[in-house]
Amino acid sequence: MSTRDAQGCRKGVQHQQQHRDTSADPSSSPVIAAFKVFQQELDTKHDKHERLVKISRDVTIESKRSIFLLHRVTSVPDVESVLKESDVKLDAVRQKIALIAEELRGEDMYQFHRAFTAGIQEYVEAVSFQHYIRHRTLISLEEINARLVFTKTQTVDSKDSTEDTPAAAAVAAETEVVPALAFQVIPSDYLLGVADLTGELMRMCIGSVGNGDIDTPFQLGEFLRQVHDGFSYIGNTGPYEVSKKLHTLRQSLAKVEDACYALRVRGSEIPKHMLADVFASRDAMMDADEGVA
Image 1 (cartoon, one colour):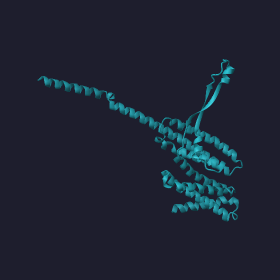
Image 2: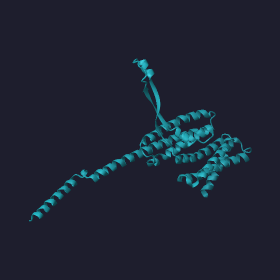
Image 3: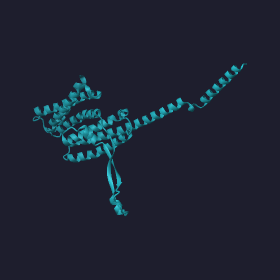
Image 4: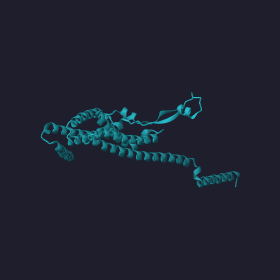
């Protein structure tokens, strides 16, 4: 065997030995190490997504409970007590939204938007419903976001005090409120929440008629027409979901206008305690016609 052949054999043996060492210890491969990093990043992202879904579900449930509570304003004499109770419930909802803001700290919100958008839309619907009952106007996006700035208090020591007594230290210590977190509702979630609001206003209209209130349906009808006009201006330029909810908005507006028409034309003929039954039967007939169509 020549010297060149011997060197070639030794190189082949060394290459096989290196291959065996790499196969025996795959963790030393840079490719495996890179994919382990990718695995950790994906696991972290999926875990955060699942936590956001659970928080969003809680936000949805509590917001619906606030809406159910607010519907009592048509049947109770003390409306302000219902509104105060809804304030407490909505404050609890905002604390859950603070958990969403904490999860999104340092993250791109749009990567996780689908995980919590349903809860935020339901919150917008609840807070806008409460705002309408209290002020008879539509709450703005800026007002909603202003309530989603979460603050914390911290103690600030004054450096001007030279006394070391406990009393002086208590006076020198001051509390300062500083913003800790802020959650911003994006315009698409706001629009979709307002679109859902129209269904609650339609139910409020029918409930008001059932309790003998014949003024509220006309106020609601005028307000819903303004909301419908606003969504009509958006047209196909808005989010895809808006075009789907626009059909439901038109149905709600049609039911309110039908109730107003019946009150104006036949209101004097129907006793107040029978108005709710009359409108319930008319709604059932309208729903049946829409189902056939």
